[in-house]
Image 1 (cartoon, one colour):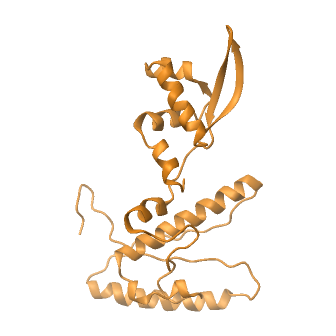
Image 2 (tube, rainbow, N blue to C red):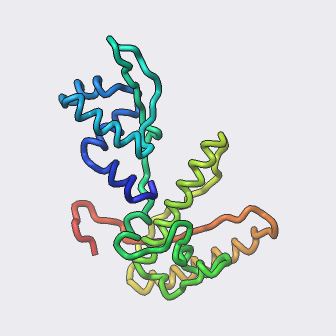
Image 3 (cartoon, rainbow, N blue to C red):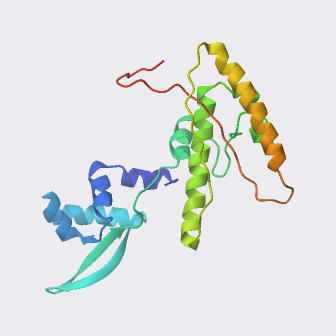
Length: 211
């Protein structure tokens, strides 16, 4: 979801509960009984969710002089575009612009991949991660609509550094290694891929403020 108004419609506790339940089709009357709520109240929330495009009509069943509307969620899960939250707080970039987000080393090409000064900034890592969520989610949804698979890859590793300076040396060596591999596989006219490498401390269990 990348529209603030649509997000506000979905975020109330009862509507989140309805969306989760409507992964399977159901009527307002049925959910009112399940949740012990007045049917008029559930109908009100149904109408708001339907207008926002979050639920859709599956069928109408005749019921003693009226048509019972069977609804279901338009997706099994909804992902909030990080830009909706960040732009509201910081006046972030418009849709389709990542404000220079991208891999923080110069491995690869494009102005958005050369913000070396931000290489060790947590804010930049969050910005890059948000851009990745936004782009991959949209491409995955488009691929699903076409009935094809979106080919991606994920690399994960855990490294224990003895001293803070080791993080800098590790990052420099990793950037150099990535640049070499990228140069070896880079093919003019080929399908462009974006590689993002980031690192952060592993959260300690039970630690609320992990520094």
